[in-house]
Length: 478
Image 1: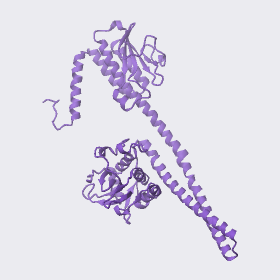
Image 2 (image 1 turned 180 degrees about the vertical axis):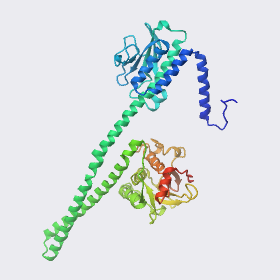
Image 3 (image 1 turned 90 degrees about the vertical axis):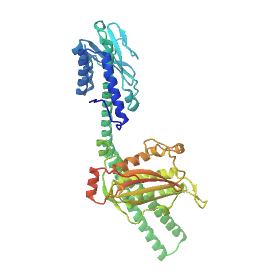
Image 4 (image 1 turned 135 degrees about the vertical axis):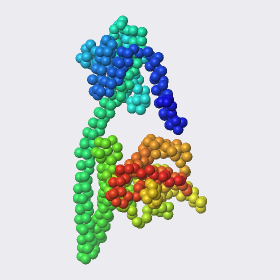
């Protein structure tokens, strides 16, 4: 049986892997490494995985050739910040030589070279890692590896140590990035604790401030009422009536500002709690805190209240004829803070990108609409979904761009002149998918509809079941 054969229905990636395996097999036959050289490489691979700290990895790099082949070596690395070469580990001086400058004859080079009784090879990093997760100020050459005595080299020892240095480079690059990531994670965890201590907890004091302001406004209202009664029952003086009118206007203005500040506080607190949640950082992903809520009252209406005036200022009306949320408020089990930010992103996009169009009556219109609909069996037999729509007027999105609109950082050609990062819709997608739902876009009459569909869950058992198994939805047709 030919073990290397593969079925025509196998993915193309498999053929690529098999081709690389065969090429590697041919390479090793061509290298003609001796039994000792082969054992040296295998020992390096095993020990590079076994020892986790950089110091022990450095020791493995220089002592494996010494113990297996009798060659001394020195590992030199480039400081990514200064660009200077320094000695990381020496098989003669061990780590005592760490951080010392190399001899003047050891220099950074793109190619191998000989100097004195040393054979010196460049250590190259993993090009794919440079492209995706670069180290600070890193170049492709991350160090040099010097082997001695050159006078004892056999015919293919030069080729062997070139390949050995390549293996050092790949393993070292992964370990350096791992150390960097570990440092970043520790920083993030510390930062989260700082945010919790210095931002979220102090933010709760605003609630006390607002409570005191609300109490004073109520007292001012009572004083204003008493003053009005005194003016009516005692005597009428023009200047007293003017003072009373000023007090009344001041009370109304204070109340308006208080209500606006209270809404802003409630919304900011909700967003801070849901985004800066410790669980997100500890698990490296969005972690939901589901609870049953009245979706229209607790999620949609607070965000709509925030954007109504901003939409009006941009000349965007809200057209309730195209699918206003029904009076019946279906209870859903969601993370209120994260789902609220989904609507915040969609309404923000509506404010930025809604454009005027001409309807069938030749009338210019510019509006946003929103709504919901229950779709039976959306997530499978007996598993309905509820679809939430946010519609705006304007030209349709180019079909070539539609597949990418929920990708991180993507911005369409027609909107690149407007402020934005291309992050909003990607955030929407992440939040909806972690809820077990799907997002989508439809080109519709006079404009564009962005939607998301959530499983229609109304009891605790359904919530638990949904967290055990993510449903596979059927995507609605545009």
